[in-house]
Image (cartoon, rainbow, N blue to C red; front, side):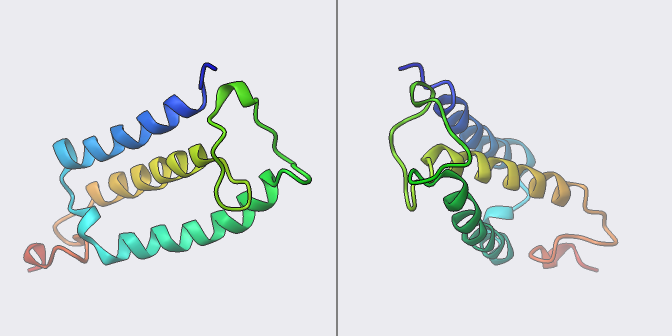
Length: 113
């Protein structure tokens, strides 16, 4: 197995976490708003991705040689969670990074003046 889908998925999540903790340091991971956003997104991912990838009648098919055999729940490939985390978190990090002194992130009250 070559895991051409799984390896980039995991590496993308590691890269995004490293970007936040080593470079950007926005504090996003300490924000309850971020975790609420991730939870809401995960809920809809369960609904949509679960329907698209269900093994009983898949709309989206994956080459089994390119991914791990792990699926949870409703036949969702675990790699999809890594890519979803990476994409959503990277967008939010870059959005927060562009905050201005006039409009800082809401979880950084020390910057509000």
